[in-house]
Length: 149
View 1: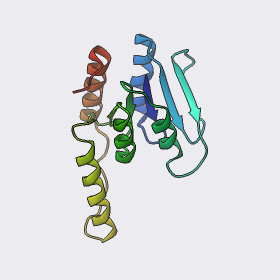
View 2 (view 1 turned 90 degrees about the vertical axis):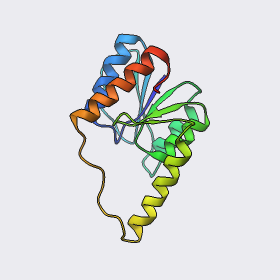
View 3 (view 1 turned 90 degrees about the horizontal axis):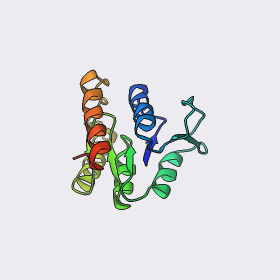
C-alpha cells in the first residue's frame, strides 16, 4: 500500500502515483485536511482528516503497516513510519528508511534550531524536473522490488 501526505505533495507526484496505482493495482491512500479531487478508481482513496497541526501525519503513522510506502517530505512523519516497518520517499526521490531516519531527524531538528536563532534562512529550492525524475525512478524501484534503495 502507498500512503500520501497529500496536503504538501506536488501535483506531479500525485499524478505519477495515480497512474502507478491504476496500472499496478496497488492501493493508494491520500490523507489530507481538506477534500481533494482524485481519479475514480477502486485503487485510490482519499481520507479527509480533521484540521490541525500534524493530524494527517498522525493518521498515516497510526495506520501504516510494515512494507508500506509513505510519500512525504515531513521528517518526523518519516521517522514514525520507519519505526513501524514502512519506508518513506520524499517528493524529490530521497529515501528515508531505517538506515538514515534518525540522522535525518537530527539534521532537521538542528536546522530548525538554526532558523529559530536567525542563523539559517531560506527554504527548499523549487521543485524541478530533476526532482520528478528522481522520484519516478525511486517509485519504479519500489513497485518492481518492494524496496526503494
